[in-house]
Length: 494
Image (tube, one colour):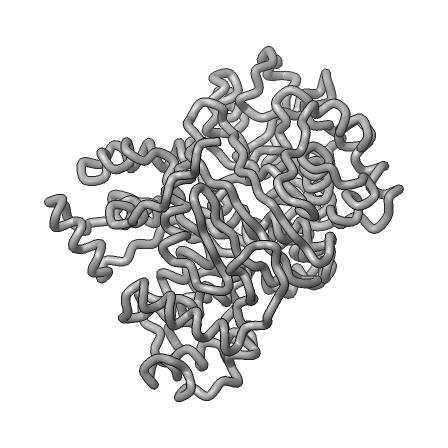
C-alpha cells in the first residue's frame, strides 16, 4: 500500500481538472515541481498529471515534505466527510487527535481509546492516512496555531502554548517547516484583523463548508437550551464548556452562509480558564456546528427526492446539531424521554442547579457546568424531578458512562456503543439512535417511531421509507424536524 492510501489517482486528477469544491477535504494534491499541496478546487493552473501525487490528509502531505498553498489555504478545509460515513478506526482516531488527546495522553492514550496497540495503530494510520499519530497531532497543532495567528490578537507566545506546542522554539520551527513562514510573517500576511467583541475573549473564525444554514441551527439550539448551561439571543448562542484543563464559555454568531465560496466562517468568542484548552474548545464547537458536513453531497442527493426536495431547496446546508460533550448529550436525551421539549428544558435546568458546578462567566444566564457522569451516578434516583423509572435509567446511564461501559468520545465503534446503550435498563432504540446522531456524529440515523416525524410525513403525503435517503438519513430527519422548529428573533440592525 502506498502512503496515500486507497485514493484513485485518475478520479482524483479528474476532480482537480474540474476544480469541484465538493472534493475539498476529501483529498489533497501535492505538486512535485513546486513543493506545495493544494485543495482540489485551487484556482491555480492545473499541474501536469506526471507531477502530482494525492494525499488523504494535510498531515500526509506535510510528512512527505510539502508546504500548504498560500492561495487556496488547504489547511483551513474541514476534515473529510468520508471518515464520518465510514466510522472506521482512522476516522475515530482523527477525531480524538483533533480534540488534542495525543497532546494530553500521548499515542498510548489514543491507542487505548480506539482499542489497538500503539504499534498497530501507528501502522494503520500510516497505511490509511499517510502519517503517524504524532505527525497528525503535529499537523493539528500547526493548523490550530495558524487560525489563532490569523484571527486573534493573542501574543505569539500565548498562541504557541494554546495550540499545544511544548515550547516556542518547537512552535517556530514547525510553522516555518509547514508554511515556509515565521509566525510573525503569517500574522502580517493574513491582512485580517480580529473583531474583538468583548474584553478577555479569544475571537476565532471556525471554518465550515457552504452553504451553511446557520439561522436554522440557531433555532434548534435555542429551542433546546438548558437554563444555566445555555442561553441564546438574536443571532447568537452561548454555553459553558467543561474542558480538560478547566471551565470555558463560548458564544457563537450564527447566520446563513450561501454557497459559492467553498468555505465560510462562523465567528466564535471563547473565554477560557486555561489557554491550553483552546484547540479542544474549538474542535468541540466545530462538532456542535457539524462543520465537517459536505452540504453539496447531502443536498444533491436529498434535493432530488420527491418528498424532501422542496425542503432541501428551501434550506440548503442544513446541519445536524452535534455536541460539545457526549455524556451530557446522552443524559439530556434520557431527561427528554416521553416529555415535551419545554418539559425537558425545565427538568434539565433543575438538575443543573442542584448538581452542576457553579462557574463565573461573562454572559448573563450562564451560571453552571452540566453535571458530570460521576456526580449523577451518585444521585438517588428518587430525588430526581422525574418519574422514578426514568430516574433509575438516568442514574444507570451515568454509572455506565462513569465506569467506561459506555464511551461517547467518538473513539469506540458506533455499533458497539449502540449495543452497550441498549443493554442498559430504560434505554430503547430511539434513545440509542438519537445519541448516535447527536453525540457520535452519525450521518445516517433515522427515527421511524418519532411521532413528530410521522406527523410531518403524513401531512406531506410521504412515506417513512428512509432507505432511499442513505447515507444521509440524519440530514433527512433534520429537514423533517425543521418544519416544526420555531424561529428565534432576528438580530437587530446596527
